Image (cartoon, rainbow, N blue to C red; front, side, top):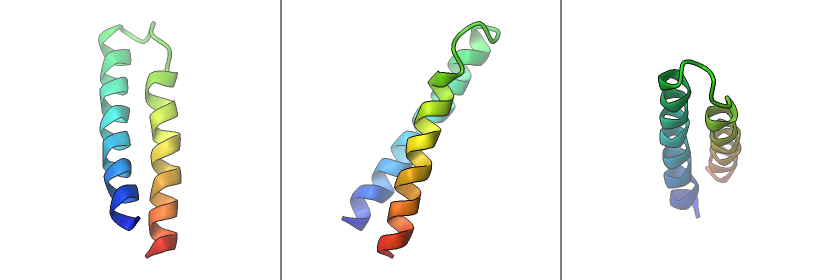
Length: 53
């Protein structure tokens, strides 16, 4: 279960950077939620991982 949350955290952090790049490529006209929502879930999964540790 720990490994699942660790892998999910890494995947969501990658999605965050991809979303931030997408927003920057569109000069800020794209919704910032493309980066903010994956980061929210990444922080949640990191917290769950740390609680299981």
